[in-house]
Image 1 (cartoon, rainbow, N blue to C red):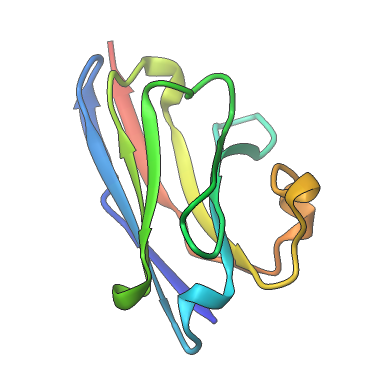
Image 2: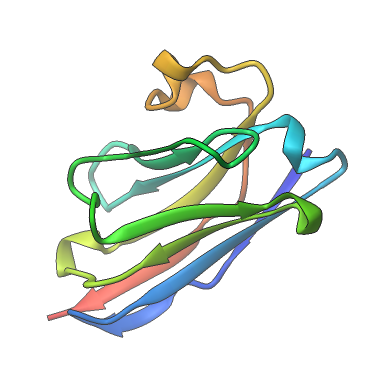
Length: 125
């Protein structure tokens, strides 16, 4: 599966952005999908994940209550709605997908097989 992320940009603190990630090649409904981010000089970190059906979602503590992950399997697309953005949210955001990943591994980037190219999110103070 190929993943194409979009929607990043520059926003002031307190603002909002919505990231999109569209999958092609196979039906997205076969994959757990997620978002990770990587800031300069830091390791890639888990942001959010969503089950194949979209029924279950998972978040890093740092974004819980501010970010919402969702998916539209008919459009092969997963979204990350980011509200109340903070300067520390500045990073390159990557979407990811995997068919066989189990719930206990959702937060581990090494468990995902497919990655998009990343989209830059910059939050100014």
